[in-house]
Image (cartoon, rainbow, N blue to C red):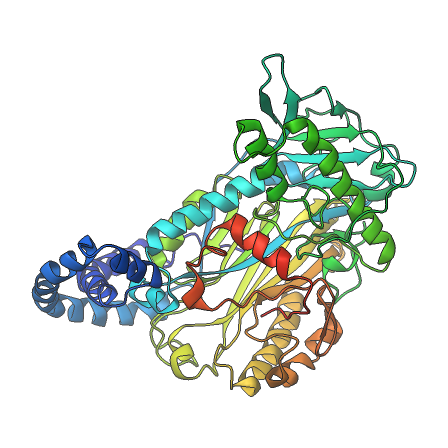
Length: 579
């Protein structure tokens, strides 16, 4: 299949579209700024209350007449551009494919040679998130602002989190030989001769209390190579394997906070059809130190001790603390032997991320900034997914679908479908389903090993359960058609091996609310396994609610990644639902 690198099939149409958007953009930008100046966020309201001479209020008074005058002057040009733009949308392709070729060891071509489908299985890491990258005036209705700057910072955070070195901690203990993968790119070393504790990069070979070791005996045979693990004999610049000795004197470990997150593991022949990879994830791939509870908080405490602030103890007392947390993780896994993967509350995006599925990337300029940032880690990206104008079966669409996909592995086939049954404000966006087929390896007999990923954003209005159920039906039907149309079974082109089939996105319902009973019992959950769900209306004990009151976004306890992490970890003792 040919992937579309431009939104239009020829340069003439692309030039006409550029002209139409140049006529529209000044009016669009002025209207957006004018509306945004009258929709303050709670952050701006607090600044205004604390500072009677708040400069933003003065700017609003001064610039509003200017914006109005320029807006009126630009309207005729915008109308002409809109007529041309809406006519061109019938020829527009439903996505833009971007590839920034990476010929290094982390490039897509190199990754395909890592897995031959024989011997141990392979782990893949998936992430999905809702970013609310709308035009600034609309974003403010959700109490967020500065869409363009947020898009750039989000891209940097994802890239830096995914590309940080992966650290594996092994605990030498009579009762515990489990493996945990750290989510930090550095460890804190003991004090040096000058009495100052130092942060040691993840590729360090040895410290006084942390001893570098080779691959844990039996690790490769039991778990296979993770996507971020170095192969035998390769450089350890991106990974550090350390061993911590000692025990806790026979004391029973404390209870563990059960956070959320995880990865997927697939055998050489792939899991059963209709099964998400989260069903059998190997230990240590979730990318966190002592996965359940040791995340950035322990690193912050250790660094605070290193800096001599806050009265925290030095680094010498922190390494045993981390070892203790890793032990707690293993004890918890023994208490829950049926649990297939680790989970945590982390202030970072997962390390060694393979596939990223995002929703609500509606703004095209923000999508371009996000793409530019993520190309520092992901070689293959799809953005500006969806349709505009009066296109096909749908009503007029002002916004695209908001779907955005990034992959480290080559994308083979793509399909997009717009849900035709959107209602009210949701009908203004081309919400739909994006289907992808990716290649993740080759067998010794030159058979391709592939995976299927479906990314969607369902109808948002809470009272429209029937619409969401219809969309779930369409999601499954379109997926079946996509798999049938992209499968290979001829003699000349041997049948491919399917490693995984994953559905992710923003479903706009949870598994606990009584108002969502219809969606909770949908047949999708008999074909796919939700790793956080026990059954309709019943979540696993560690599942944490993520529905946050937008008016509280700038409260101190949740306004930073570290504070939000602590808030979630403090609340996991109470049963909760995921939104």
